Image 1 (tube, rainbow, N blue to C red):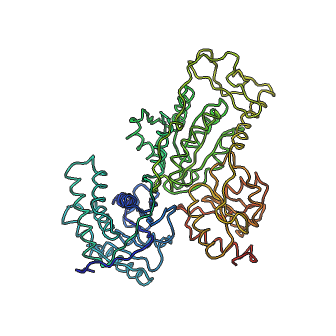
Image 2 (cartoon, rainbow, N blue to C red):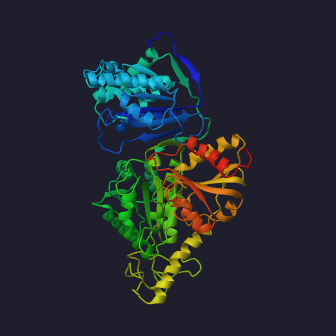
Image 3 (tube, rainbow, N blue to C red):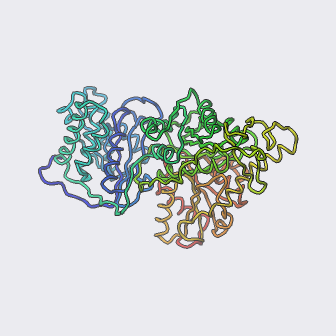
Length: 627
């Protein structure tokens, strides 16, 4: 719709944008750059990458949709939101896949590449025409645009450059400062040739002008008012920054989706902080290398995902038995086996708690935001050294690849590891001089005079002598377990979001916090008595849970892992498999906790949780306030 008039500007508080394409067309780079530009202009931002499970799915296939969702607003954004408001699609088939998945609803504005209408293949052209007609009949607002044809004026291969053209279009549609955009793409292409950099700059400008000429609308999303300096990263970058800020000097890992980009980021910057990234030949070698570094006196970190965490379990057990500090970051993905390697899930909680053989108590944390991916690495390093134990930090694919703006951390000296103690070791102190009340013990370092001992993964005495007698093993188990009790005693009860008592309490962990709290706020605004609570410590659990749960008529967890539907065939209360956090909380509080879980391979949406709140209140608490 060519127009010579200035586009009409609509002022809005937030918008959800998607770019979808075939794999390899750069939609994710365009979207992440748009998110970064928006954050630097003061908007709250959350992005979610849309990644097919296959490395190279068939072109023009609904299941092969690759792209990104960007939610931007005039406030702090914590989740992906519900249906998209505006979509840029490179072909109608990937668009079909997203519509079929429920990502859009009638009324969604779609900017669709039109070249397929005149494709040389009559089959493709007819398929395109029929599909677009179907979309319009269902109420989607489809605008066909010759984006690729416009790109051909600048490049012979528009498939490669179209993403920067689309970025320019979005910058015009959302009134982004073109100079901020140019600075961002010049930084992104700084390692490329001058020719490549200029081409992308010209494509960006061309897309900006194209949108101004072809579209008679645009949006203004005012900045989020805040007076602190902000930083924009994804979760894996935040983990890498946390590693450096914590004083960890060695990260050892084996490439695995969706954790690998953490090592790529560290490989670029870690040496500036005196750190080393070691790429091992496999997962077991990676954790063994990290264990050796930690034993030698410098607490190390290894980063992996679910299948890698499983392979590391025997070595994690060694760290528990030998009481070696270690930080393990596990970026959860869909499982089991290879499962859904590019999709989000929260299926590794019980694996983290109980995957190692024998009784192997360890600290398990879960980050709820990208900001916490940074801070929790520092917490994990501190706890690992204080309690001489492995600490597992659980993130997930939603956090790992998503981008969020958050307050820029100010480095503090007390985040760092203390210097290695090289003083003479007291010969009267054993390697495991367990404190009977806390289970804590001193930690001699190899090379420390007088502190020599033989490290073992076998049951041992306080002198680290192998011992198979009943009392030595009993005492060792007691001391290792007591450390968790000592840690729990130092924790505060979790805070409740919403009313402190009432009808329904939703309990979450990990990246679901933003969606849960948004749903709770939406329901609360309608007078429904619902609250939420989010757990960061999963081993040990935060104290006071039974008392908090007792203030609500119904408690249920919200999770991205599998549970049986209560009314499914063959399922009775005794046979029902429930969500992993629900199982854990039932065991610890002896309270009948329900659950609502989904394993769709995508983050939970606030709208879906809101609908579940209304269903639960109507079906189980019909006399509750607001129903």
